Length: 432
Image 1 (cartoon, rainbow, N blue to C red):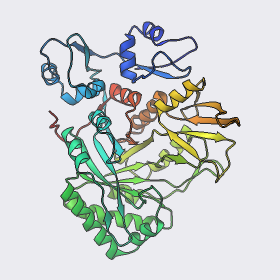
Image 2: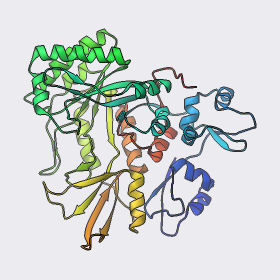
Image 3: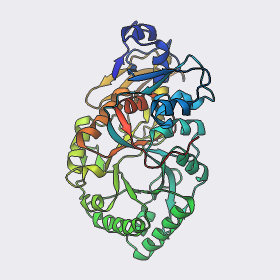
Image 4: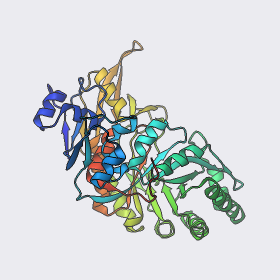
C-alpha cells in the first residue's frame, strides 16, 4: 500500500500513470466524488491486488467467490462499490484478494439505528462487531430502549455480531451523573439493571453488551470494578460477552495530563476494553488534536493495567471546523467527515497541511459570507491518520480497533485496513 499526497499540478491521471494503475481504479478505491478537482495535500491510496478477475457473461458474485476459494464477504470488502449494485457486468475487473500474508484484526463500529441502510450494508463486510447506540440507563435501574430490530437482523446477515451499547448519556449525548452514580452505589438498583440488560439481550438477539463507563477516577474506580464484575459474572454465565468503552480522564488545561486510574480490575473482568472519547456533532475544544506521543503515553500506561489482547484502540473519525480565535467556553466547532473536509478545502481553495506530531491533516481558510471575514481552521482524519492509528494495534498487540462512528462510508479508511489486515468474523455469514 502506498499513500500518495497530492502535489501542485497533479491530476488523477498523472498520479495513475506514475503508479501504473488505472485512474478509474484510483477513483473507485478511494471513493473520489470529484476526481477532476483534487486538493493539494489530499491523500490518494494506491493498492496492488494479488489477484483480480475479469467478469464473464453469466458470472455471479457467489460463483466467482466459490471458484477462487474466497468468501462473498471478502469480495465485498475488496470491491465495496459492489454493495451499491444489483448486477455485475462482463469485462469489469474484480479484486479477488490482496496479499495473503496479513495479520488478523478485529473491528468494531459504532452506529445509530437510523444509519442509512446502503451505508450500513456497504460497511458490514468490514466489521467483526457492530455496537448499536444508544440504550440508556435510568436512575432506578431501568433501560430506555431503541428501535433496533432491523439493524440487528441486517448485521447478522453479514456475519457481524450485534452488540447492545448501554450508556448513562441522554438521548442528545449529554452526561448524566445522577444516573451513573445512582446505579454505581446501590446494589439493589444494580441487580435490577443487570436483569433488565439480560432480558434485552435475549429478547432482541444481541451477541453481547458494550457498556460505556465515564467519570472513572481514583476515588470511585473500585465501585466501577465491582459493578463490572457483577455484570460479567451474570452475563457470562448466560453466554454473553461484556465489553467496556472507557472515556479516559484526560485534561488539556496545562498540557496533556491524564488521571492514572487503576484499570486492572476492569481489564480482568471485561472481555474487551476500548478507550475512546466520543465525538459529537459539535465540540467546545480546544481546537487541536492529540499528539501521537501523548496517545502513546496513555497507551503505555494502559497496558500496565490491562492485557493487550483485551484492548481495542478507539478511533474517532469525525473532524471539526473551528472559527478563530478560540475562546474557551464560548467557541463551538461544527463536525464534518473526511469527504466533507476535502470538499470544503476545494471550495475555499485551501491547501491541506499535515501535522506530524498528531498525525492529522488540517487547513485554514477565511469565511466572508457574513460580510465580516473570519479565520477558520479545520482538523480531520485522512489515510495517513488511519494508517498510523491502525499500526499501533499491531505494534502493541491489541485485539483490534473501535471506530466512532460509521454513519458515513469512509472509503480510504476501509481501503487502508482491508488491504493490510485480515478482518475477523465471529458469526457465519448468511447473506445471499
